Each structure stands twice: as C-alpha cells, then as structure tokens.
Length: 417
Image 1 (cartoon, rainbow, N blue to C red):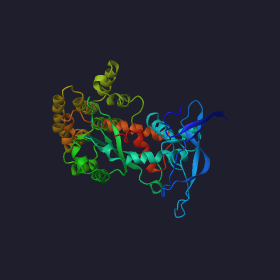
Image 2 (image 1 turned 180 degrees about the vertical axis):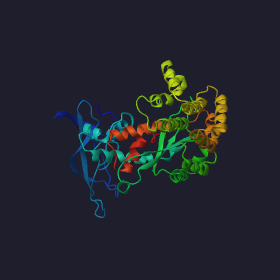
Image 3 (image 1 turned 90 degrees about the horizontal axis):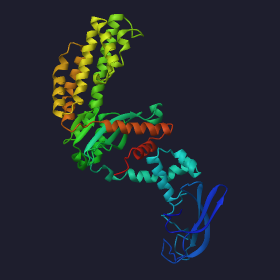
C-alpha cells in the first residue's frame, strides 16, 4: 500500500472514524545543520497529518517529523525540521504521490479539482495549491514545443461576463497537428493566449524562436485573414492550409442564403410549415450521396414547385461540387475539381455563389494546399476545442485565466512533450 513512499518506514496502521491512518517516520541517522553543517541535537518530533491517495476509504499519513536544534552560537538557523522531498513538499499537506494521482485524474479521467478535494477529504484551495506548481513547471518546459511540424490555430470564448471584470472573452489556441509514424494526427494543445487577432498569433510565434518556426511545415487555419497574415509573416517555410470543414460550411451557408432570399422573393415571408423550400432546408445541407430515395423525391418536388427555385437547385449543385473535391479518393482528381471551382464560381450569376467564388479566389493557395499536403486540416484543432468545452462545463466555468490555461493544457495533452 505504501509503495512509492521512499525514505520513511511504517510504524503503525489503524482504522479510525472511516479513515485508514498510517503512522510513518524516518530512520535515525546523524544530521547536520543546513546552515553551518554542524551536527545537531534532537528536539523531539511533531505529528504532521498528510492526505494520501484514497482507496476504499480515505487515507491519512501521520508523519512523525523530527525537529532539530543547532548548537552553534553563530548559526542563524537555531532550529529546523526534517524534510523528505519524496514524501511531501515543504509546508504541503498532500503527499507527492497523491499530487501525481490527482494530476493523472485531471488528465485522463475528466476529474475536477472539487471532485478530487472531496475524495481526499480536503478543500479546493489545498488541492490546487499542491497541483498548480507542478503544472506551472510542466508548462514552462520548452521541450514540449519540439518536433512540431504541423500547426493549427483557432479561437474560442472562455467566459461570458463583462470583459472589464475578467479580460478578453476570446482566446487564441495553438495546436500541434503533427502526424505520428503511422500517419495519424495526435492533436495536443500547445498554448492559449488572450485575444482573437493575427497580432496575438504572431506574438506567440515570435516568442517560440527561430528553431520552432523553421520546423513548422504546415499551418492549418480557418478562413480568418488575421491568422493568415501572421503565418505569412512568421512562418516562412510553412504552407498555409484552409480547413476543409470550414470551406464546405461556406458552401452550405451560401445555399442557405439563396434559399432564404428566394423564399422572400416568391412568398414574401420567412419559411413556414408547408412551404416547399422550408420543407427541404435540412436536405439542402446534406451530401447528395447520403440522400435517401424519399429525400430525393421531396427535393425534386420542392424545386419543381416554382421556376424561381431553380436558383436554389443550382446553388445546391455548386455546393455539392465544392464538397465533392474533398471526397475524391485521388488527390489529383480532387485538386482538378477544386481548381475548376475557383476558376468558375466567381462568374456565377447567383450573387451568393459569386461571392463564395471570390472568397475562394482570395484563398486560392491555401484552399488548394489541402491536396498537396496529404489532406492536412484543422480537424485536430476542433477536437481539442471539444475537450476544452467539456472541461469548462465540468468545472462550471472559470474565473481565473491562469488556472484555465493550465487546466486546459493538462486536459488537452499540452504538457506532455
């Protein structure tokens, strides 16, 4: 049971008031004063109660800590107590292995600080004061930024109160999207910085140093010009890749805009139950290959209900063509479709599709880079955002951005090199 508690031996074990109480002490040995090195004399012992890893019941370690007196008249130390770093930190009340257990629970089991405090039989502050220094030490380890060859970036909102009370609502998150030896992406959060801007991203990249920036070869991002500017300025050797999900989302949004406009032009009101276009709004968001025969019949009937609906059908076909570029088994074939999309959409007489085409033309290189970088995307970044959202809900929100950053780095693998 006491495996891992080096430097102490067990004197007594008993069950008391629903607790397993283990009394330990260090073996006797000559001790020198840490101030002057002179051999010291004993002043007896004091009992120090420590919280240990819980089992079936809570565990308390009672450490009979030795106290010493220095007899050297010129030594400023006078008295001091023994320390066992492998057992507990100075002035700490949670054993080292309980701290390691708590960090493991936070990282792998979606635990909360309050939940761990309840299991250990102590307070939130006591647990966090024991865990926080370890997380700070891991976050300061620059080795966790090594071997990052693919980088993702995205923003999220970490609180919903007045920014004057808690600072900026938006945070920019950087994610390691480097693939392993099997070609799989093992996404992990690298950092969270305040703000949603190219400046925030560029500043973080500048702080990482030349070695880090030179090793990044692929930089995935959503269609946000600020992040693209930071990549162009700081990552000279990296290829910017526009995220496939957001490109398809732009196409779907364009179809929805066309549907709403045609709905207003033909009927003079927003969609209502029984309106042909309103009845197929979800079908228009689906992939053509996923539609059932019944859905195809409904779509055809809605398009034939009014000649003006042809605009919606053409827009839907354009979105399907854009989507099909990402579903080709052969990347060369997908690139050909993507190039055709870029070269033709901006000439479409449907204004929403023409606007989509102009957007893709502005992002042409980043859009087509998907097909030359082995289908690189920002999907891993979105997965990390999902983990962040989960842990924020578990904690019922955060009030301290420093604590929030450390907790999310731990939960999303950012503290593991």
